[in-house]
Length: 397
Image 1 (cartoon, rainbow, N blue to C red):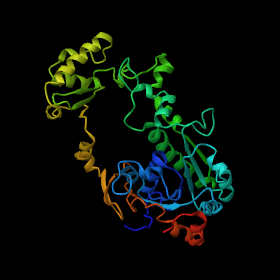
Image 2 (image 1 turned 90 degrees about the horizontal axis):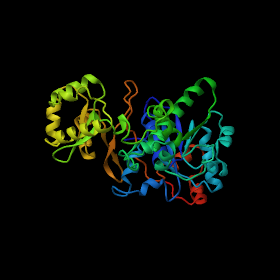
Image 3 (image 1 turned 30 degrees about the horizontal axis):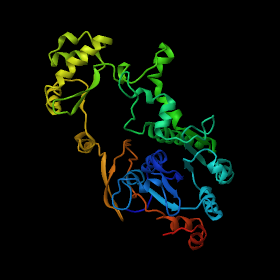
Image 4 (image 1 turned 180 degrees about the vertical axis):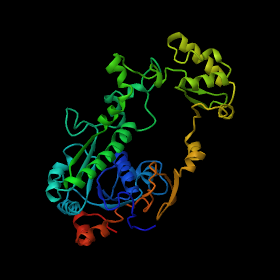
């Protein structure tokens, strides 16, 4: 493992990552995996809050180790003039700045977009926030659950007539934040190639979550129906598109939409009378649920897998997380990798979800130690690292 930048798709792009926790961390890791040089700017002594979030491996958080490969770490105190000066000098030859503070924080520090674009007109500045840079909620505190609640997407999770449930994945953080930010940044990079100018990329995780209503939002916009968990076909109401408990208390997921798949399934399980009742409602749906519930409880999950995989229908076992890590499909796609870390030893990594034929993603650097690259990066821009250490009161390596 060395610190050279591979010739990936984004090789040559330099990103200053001022974010903490999940949304920004996942965004910049995607870009780093594609070859961008990502310098993680962290608070002295504490660093990214995620470093101490359980579970820990040896000294570092497991989630930090899964979100910060291919990055360097520089510690800067943004409250000191030295720290601000260093950041401005780093921004002079950077391509992208990503931050995840509440709107106005970087401006108050004197490090906002208006300041940085005067230093570097080509800078692309991406701000990821809960509610965006404008609007009445712009400075309101929140996290993933709150953004989904405001966006109306939280109401899609749960059973019919019951309260919404807490989703098991951070949908607004990742889908509405990380992925939207990466997309916006790449669009700005392409635009800059012709205009020569950078721009401000305003990412609201609430906006991102709301945009995922492009399917369920149609219920309200074109039918006047409020979609809720368990009450619409693809969010728990339809027996043909649902999850069933098996004899061994494990689960099977049916994802049958097309009529020919439904007919194949019904014939396979000896329920031909259901073929013309694929989308029942009300009492009919309740009765069909009872039939399928009783059916699936006659075999174990793995027995059902063996039985159903002989025909062409959309179904799957509901994997536990440990089973997913051992699933032959995910292993065949290289979605479980390893990297050597100087303190943590050999650590697992999640693989690359984007496969590029000519410029494949790769792991070039393990997740960095706090401030590991401070001395190296400051010397590149002409600073005396010893003086920076004294003024910012942080250890440099």
